View 1: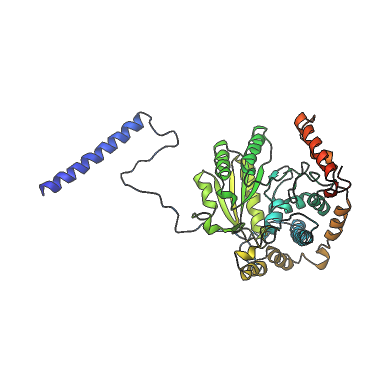
View 2 (view 1 turned 120 degrees about the vertical axis):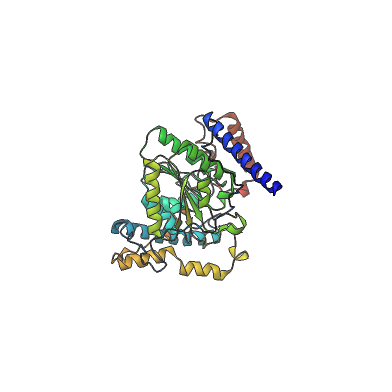
Length: 414
């Protein structure tokens, strides 16, 4: 009994010491610089993950029925433009993919299954908003006025195309449309987007930046650097993650143990939301709301759009090597964002056969093939105002190489 009493007294005295130390620290203003600290006597580790998954916002179910009163989000004109754009993007992908298989293109990458993310997000933005995309968002450019012919010219690398052949196919860009040219290395665009957003903040612009990336990019260091940079600097940037289940052949289950990407925003103090990426209305409303917050409150937002990559990663990939054909077909037929949105606009009485786009993608491809290739000189221009000596030397060496091996180069290469 005596020993037990001494133990109790010892704990009470220890508690008093902790409280006295806490009070002393508070009186001396010794709160940690990171934040105000609330002390506790209990030894608690935060759980690695919550048992409850973050809920996914959506408006339309798989049959195109609205699950809330948010189905009046868009006008007939906007809805039909979104739908037409999704169909156009899907059709363009089919033709361009086949052109690559025929040897007419060196590379291509489709957006099958992710059409709603492309067009609905684009519809929610302002043309003054700056877009930094990855490689599965050509629909944003399509919405802003980049034509099918523009896409074809870039992919064929001809003299009329953006970049004039100095970048591989699907690396689109347009200064006039505020769409920063794509770069191949994953996630480089996230810190860049934050820097651009901060410049908009400094110039007090009424616009924001949106940056697109995939779930695989969230495993890169630039993802974490970008989010932390944006949070600390209160940059008006919308981070848009397409969680489509696969980083090439690596499934999300082998990428992270957390509840997807959305929970990572909270760790950096960023407001975040998860949305059904196959629901065009939901994507539109989330991006529209995120844009308002980013601009009005001058802060970053993280969006995780849940979707599925129906296509192979690219023309260099065969996804049937690591996932079943039945799985792909299930998502293609049962969860098509185009079919879901089509059902909704049909119920609204907005759609008819007259509204369906009759595309001339084949014609655009043929015209792109007829266009002349850029002259050799263009490989070295548009980087410096005056060509430096090292590039002049490289050009000389290249021309000498071509002259020694004329059969390996087209006649009009010079």
